[in-house]
Image (cartoon, rainbow, N blue to C red; front, top):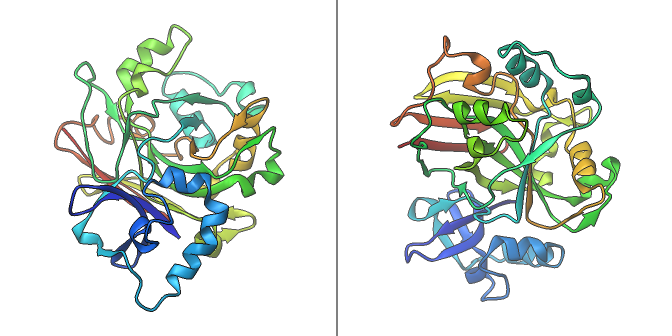
Length: 303
């Protein structure tokens, strides 16, 4: 399934799923049995899934609308939290080398993350406002997973059962603000505070089974700016698995349905890593497209 949040023709926010060129409003299709909000659905997803299978089997399913008639929002417009990890070695190594730094030994010992602003989530087609004081605006090509059930001290080998699904993620970065604040030894914060895009849908794990290869998903990851291909990587190259990330995040802490965990940037997946000799920093009017096999595409324009 590919779960979404959207605004219908009446401007009402609803949750549902994609069905080819259609979206299905889960509240309408179930005559009110399923919720209007996707976070509410995820919190009770185990009991809801079997009912959705029944709805999909109906010959004249209610609640269908043309995808072209609705406006897709972020699948979780207000997630409970967003932790973003730093899990692709190529990105870490190259980005640090551009600052004259080596990869610290501790990076190979533990997967690390920071909390970003879960109230600044943007949708797959939203405009992104460049912070007024920012001159070095950057995109970051990532995958995110969404936690589907409550758990604490989750072991990596058990973590897959806690994942509801995956989506594309763009961890927008004000690099000049980030560089200055991190000299203090705390951060990133304001450099990441203004926007994170997720979408276009949350894809459940069964949809990605065809891409499994030796226990990892073979998913091509690409980024284009104004139609020009800049970044190209593969999810298989990740150093830390989502299982290891979830184990780290849940150590001594309870994770709840609707929390988002980002992978960090894939190798070549940002301008910081590529260098401004390859492409200048982002400016108003630029269109940024991030596309991942099996997960779809998010397209945002800078204003």
